[in-house]
Length: 275
Image (tube, rainbow, N blue to C red; front, side):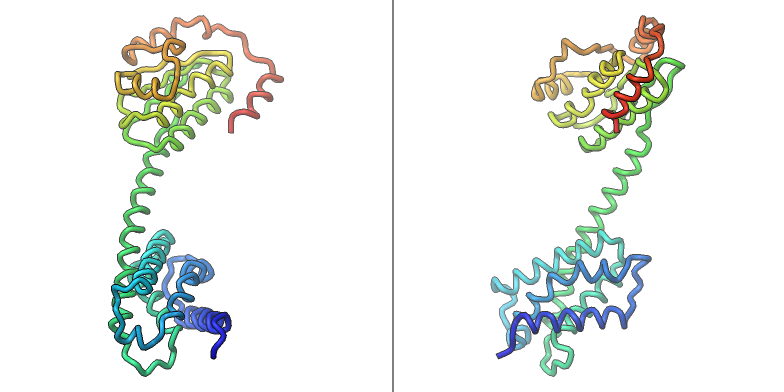
């Protein structure tokens, strides 16, 4: 009786050799990365007897488990930014590595396996496109310098809390580097308020106070008030303006505009808190 571990090692070695021989177009992605994503499914493929693959019940648990893993593999190949053609070819190479000299017709199984990988690839492609769109949108959310003593952060669209936190951190860093202590954060066009997003955006108040200044928020409607309440953020401790014009006027008339420059010791200390 064949040793399962030895068989898995053999299949893995065959797949590696087949991958290197085929040299599929990967668009710069290393074959090592492709190999690492496909390797987990090889033991499952090896455990399916060839007789079952030739005419088994593809709806049974063991097949569904295998197809589920292949779906995940397809998703991972999409996230590597491979093309659909390359993903299908890589999947075929994995299937061929299980039985390199197979004389039994297992093409129906192979087609189902490839279909599962393609399904996962489509999901992964949608995820990657969405992620790329979010990254492009987030890259535009840079602090705007209003004048020598004021920065503004105007956020629009829908963004994950982590992205919003990065934007607020960037605002703090810009204020620190420019020795500015006044900030305006406009939430008017920021969509889908919730607890996590409220925590992220209203943390700008803490950063401004840490710098010895203040932050004025705009666009804090009932939705944002509800989100802040859910996050236990005391809105009465924040400075809120009804619109951007009022916020700008308040900032321009703020006594913080005349605050003497901070000592270098404080700048070094604050730099440790702002990434």
